[in-house]
Picture 1 (cartoon, helix red, strand yellow):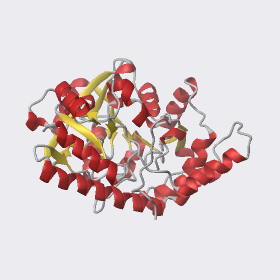
Picture 2 (cartoon, one colour):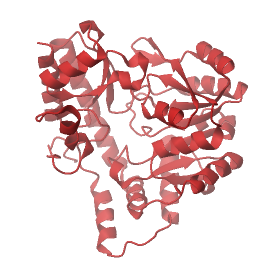
Picture 3 (cartoon, helix red, strand yellow):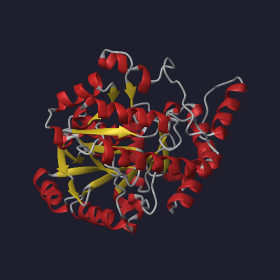
Picture 4 (spheres, helix red, strand yellow):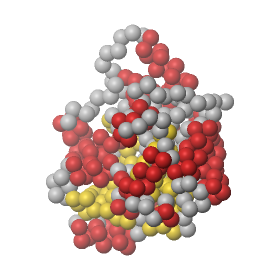
Length: 388
C-alpha cells in the first residue's frame, strides 16, 4: 500500500511548486496548492529503475529502446483500448514544447488557431508566441460542468478561417472527461471545415469511475487522419522532472511535417531518464495508479464536504478526471487581483489564478488536491480564514 498520507518536506529541494512562491509573492509561510505536480513519492519500481541507470555510471547518448515502445503500446491498449503502431510514436521533452512544434508544423504566421476558454494557459502562449491568431471558444456550464458550444465554434471556424484546434482532453482546469459522443461531434465539425486537431491528453490516466476516457483518435475511425495526440507518463506518475512526452501521429504526412520541424528545432532527443522512467511507470504502474485514484477521490470528497459546511460561498466544479478543482469565488464580488491578494496575503495559501486560464476564468481559482489529506485540510482552513 502506497503511503499517500505521508507528508514530505519539499522545501529547499529546488522544487518549483514549493521553492518559487517566496520569490513570486514576497513572503514566507505560504502553502502551495497550485503547480500541477503531486506531493507524493514516485512509484518504487520507477525509482529503482532510475537508480539502476545511475549506478551503471556511464550516462552516454541513448536511443529509445524497443522495450519502451512496447511498454507504451501495451499501456495504451490495456488502459485506453488504443492500438498504435510503433512508427506513429514520437518523443519530445514535454507536451507544451510539442504544442509549439505542432503550431509551427501545421500553420503559418497569421493563421487562426482555436482553443477553449477557460483552458490550460500555455495553449494561448504557444499560439501568440508563434505569431498566430488566437481564437477563444467559450465553454458553457451546464449541470455543474463544462460543455462545448459547437454552434458558436462552427461560426468562429468559418469567420476566422481557423486552421488548427487545440483540444484539452481531459479538460484542465475543469476536469471534464469528454465523452466519446462529444469528441465525435467536435471531430466531425473539424473534419467538415478541414481543421486539424491537436489533442493534449496528458491527464488521460487520471479518470474517476464511472467516467471513461476516450482518446480523440479513437472517437471515430477517420479522426486518425487529421489529428495529433500528445501525452506522457509524467503527469500520471509524478515524474515531471524527467522531461519526456509522446506524440502519436498516425497520418504519415502529418508525422513527416512534425518531424521536420522537430529536427529543425533540434528537439528530437530525450535524456535517458525520460526513457527509463516512462518505461518503468508503464510496466509497473497499474496498481499504484489505482491506489492513487482512490486517494485523490477521497481528497475531492474532502474539498466538497469542507466547502459545503465551512465556505458555502465558493462553488466547486467536481472533476471527472485530473487532480485539479475549478473553484468559483464570484460570490465575494472581488476583482481577480483582490481575490488572489486575499488568499495569498491573508489566507497564506497559493492557488492558480483563474484569470490566467482565459477571460472566462475571472473570479475563479484552480486548486491542486494531489497532496496528503493533512496538507489539503490545512489549505482549506487557510482558504476559509482568508474570508473571515
